[in-house]
Length: 461
Image 1 (cartoon, rainbow, N blue to C red):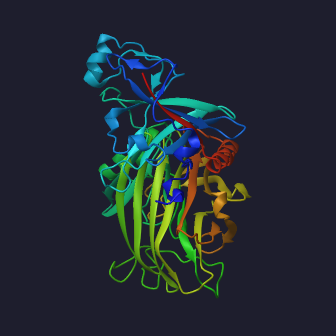
Image 2 (image 1 turned 180 degrees about the vertical axis):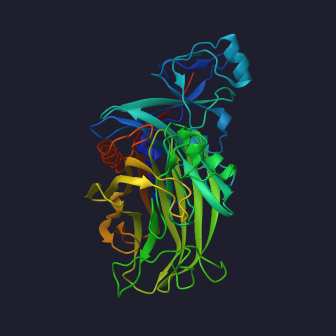
Image 3 (image 1 turned 90 degrees about the vertical axis):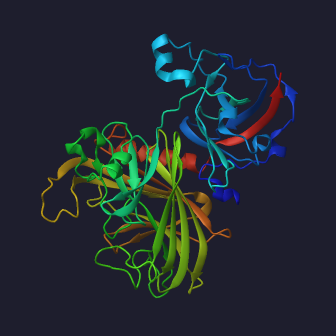
């Protein structure tokens, strides 16, 4: 797989450049937990190149970077922060509640959560995912201990799922503060929570109206994004009409689609979609969306997107690939956009970052009979970030409610990546427009300067 397809926060380094030593003696104290006293570990160093602190920063490591872990099973790995505070021995009540898989007393560090994710469903892990806190210009040491052990419950802080939601298939992905769903199969709805929790399983499992869930539990929040015929909280398209160079072709608006209802009709003659849960927590959750048989009238395309929600973050990311990209015009380019909030009281655009938001009356746009009362919020904000390496060019597209759109020139490997972010004034965090703007701009800096793997050594005792 091309490194660009490895993830929005992937670390790009090869083992020979990292001082890899097959086996070396280690002087640093060794981690233990109960009777678990491993004799093999891999020491890794992760570096923050930014002159500012970063929190819960995603890190992706690949089998190419950790060749000694190829084929490893998740219960044979224990990830430890040697500077972390060890857990004390559990009392009887906690041990009885957690059973034989709860943490026991630790020494010389603290076990932290991670994921071994199999992205292509071949039974082998493709990415080891973790999150780290780093000070400005800090290099942090972590240890990957080898040896089978079954202790360490890992509560989920993200969720991804697919459900029959109001009689059609809808994928969901969320963190504790904010979530996304594809009511329309190409453009994201956004829902904000009032308290940190996971609730999309209730939305699709109980078929709850996202604009009315507060009647059941106010903590679940509300849908905060009207999509309709716009890009909503995030969507993609293609600039492929030479006579209208600022117009974007989109998968659900084709010569054969039902323009009035904003859905494609027949999958044999028009665009069709397929959804898949790739991984589901605890730290990140992924949905794969395939767009097939898309004929814009100006070209034929197939697109695959891998949406990811991250623990502790108000953003999600998308890895986009075009297995088929056959425009009629040689000047065709890709598009990623979000709907402009109206009224737009928050507005920011610089480089590959655009932020929009404002106060509004939140109401269900499909509620033509006005049986649901709207409620006023101080602000709802959304943002789109395209990584600098793709050299995005900003456009404002006046059609379909007005959308902020980036133009991305096709890449050699047919892929690009972007970030979506959202927050609202009634959420558990980022309650002000200024806080949301600052968060997005800082997250964009981190997105463009991923944490790097700068050292690695296999050790034994």
